[in-house]
Length: 620
View 1 (cartoon, one colour):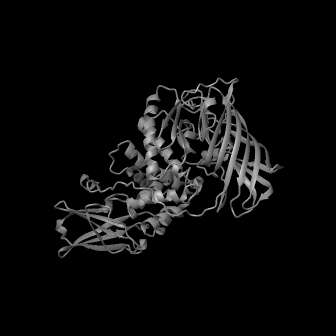
View 2: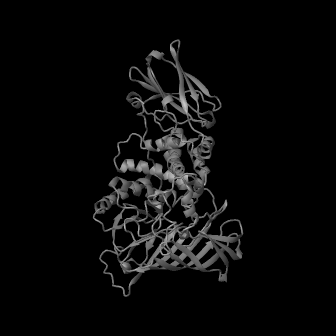
View 3: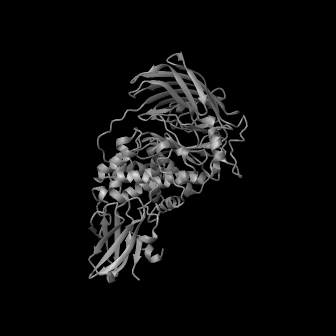
C-alpha cells in the first residue's frame, strides 16, 4: 500500500468514555456454593492435606442425583489427557514442552507430578459413592438434592503440587516456590445447559459463585497472597499488619493464614519465602497488594508497575463498571499471566512495557471472567477477546501511546488466520481446536474484533455504552453471546443477529471492493462489489483534489437502522440500503470524476476486510 493511500486512513475515532448506564436486571437462576477449607502445606515435599465443608444451594428447577468436582492437578501426570493432547497437537504450547517439542508432563517422576484425591466424602452426614475419572470426580448422591434445597458435603483430600508446567505448580522458572491455582476439589458448574464437568486438557475454567473461608497452614517464613481478605493480619504480619502494630512472634514452624472471599468463583494463593510485599491504595477504590521476588533484576520495574496498576484499575472501573471488591493482588508466579478472583499470577522478569501489558490484560479479566464469568470453554472469545479489546485501550492511555489504531496488530493476526485455511468457528469448544494457533487468534484477536468492529457498525459511543450496560446487567450472571448482542441492539436500535451469527458461528469472511469508478455526465458512478460471504454496512470516504473530503454511508438492509455519523466535521450522505444477497451496488457522487483524488472503503480500518488492496481507488 502506498504512503499516499495510508494517509487516507486517518479517521480512526477514539473510543469515548461516558457515564455508567443501567437498564433493569435480567432474571437468571444460578447455583451457589460456600466453601470452608483448612489446608496444611508441607513446603519440603510440596504435599498437602485438607478438609472441605461445602454447602451447595440448588437454585435450578431440577432435582440433582449426581454432582461433579474438578481435580485439576491430576492433569499433571504422565498419560493424562493433557499429556496425550500435548503429544498429539501439531503446535504444542512451548511452555509445556522441552526444546525438542516433547511433553514435559510425560517425563514427570512420582515426586514431580501433581495429584489431587478425595480420601473421604459425605453428603449431609451420609457416605456417598464417588470415583475419579482423570481430572473429574464423579459423585453419586446418597439423596437427590431437590430444586431449591441445600446439601452439605464434607470431604477430606490430599494433593501434591506439580512442577510448574502450566498455570499452577511449584518452583517456576523465576524461582517462585508455590503458584497455587486449581489446587482444591472444585464443584463443577450446573446451569440451564446442564453440567459442565469438562476434563482439564489445557484451556480455561468455569466456576460456581459463592463465599470462601480458607485457612492455610504453611512454613512461617513464607509470605502468602492471592484471593480474599486476610482475617488475622495483625497475627500474621508479613506486611499485612495494621501500621504500627507489633507482631507477636509465633511459636512453632508454621503460621495459619485465614482468608475470606465473598462472592467469587475461584480461590488462588501463592507463597514464597523471598516475596517483597508492597501495598498501594486506589483513590476511591480497592487496596492493591504487590508480591514479587527480592531480585535486583526486577525491583525497579515492579516499583514502577504499581502506579500503572492504579491507573489501569481506574480506567477499567470507568469504562466497564466499578470493581466490586476491596482488594486486588498482583503476584509474581505462574508461567506467563493468568487471572484469578481478586488476583493474578504473572511472570515478573520482563521489560517494563511487557510487565504493564500483562498486568493490564490480567486485571481486565477481573471484569470479564471473574465478575461476568462467561463459560470460557464454550465462549472463550467473550472473555479473552473482550479482555484484549479493553486492555489495548487501557495500554494506549496509561502508556501514552501515539498509535493511531491500537488494534492494527489484532486485525493483522485475524487476517493471517482467516486466509490460512485453518480457521474454525468461534463456537468450537476451546479444547477442540485443531491448532493452538487457531485457538489463540480466534479467542484473542477475533474475539477482540467482535467489539471493535461492533463499534464500526453501531458507533463508538454506542459500543462503550453497550459494554457498560452489559456489565451492569450481567455481572455475576454467566452471560452467553446472545446477551451482549441484545444489549447492543437495545442501545443502538440496530438489528444484529446477522453479525453474531456470521462472525461467531461461521468462518465467513468480509471482502468488499471498489469494482469500477466511471464518469456519468457531470457526476461519478461508483460500483462496489461484495466478494466475501459476510455482510457489512459500508463507510466510503471520498477525497477531492482540493483537499476536501466527504463520506457516503451504505447501511446493510438487514440492520433495519443506521449509525450516527462517526466523522465529526466531515459531511456524510446516507445512501440506499444494500440488501446482502446483491453482489454489487452502485451509487453516484454529485461531482465530476476529474475532481476526485481517491475513494476508500472504511477509512477507520475497523471493518475486518480480509483484502484491503481492493478497498482503495486512486485517480491516475
